[in-house]
Length: 215
Image (tube, rainbow, N blue to C red; front, top):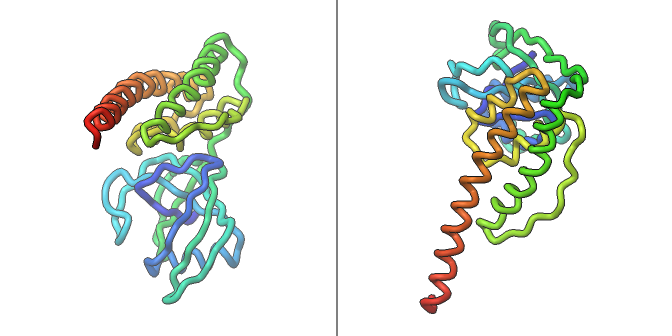
């Protein structure tokens, strides 16, 4: 599978626009457009996006090109979307872009245990509260979001919205069992909700202080 190591975690269903300017990736895009194949997006553990030698994590997400525009100089602007999670088995010889042997991560329907039900209810209750607070920091209003019903889809939908560094998002991507993923997401949301409430209170105090001073 062609691989594109990035400083971004891609979740299934998540849109990812990319600007392609390195020669090796221009070659990759041309070949993908001709074949209609997907490529793997995987978070860089060590190294840089530009140039060679980046060491990726072991779990990533396949991406499908939905639209592509060729720009001057052979560069590309592409719109992609995540499809399925995969596990990187080993890196192969570059072609000239990174290439690897992968295994698709199966996502069977989980048993509807009390623990999973509780974690799902926690996530479905906590995320809308967190989302509204996070938007209020930039004085935006949140419309109601229709959350997915299935556990894996719920995690993949919410993951891109979390105001986190990429490494914690990678943890959400790597956990394989649905119950583990949802339970971990519930813990993350609890921490984010507490932190964001404090940030909103500070934001409001600063805003009202400025109004009161006539600034």
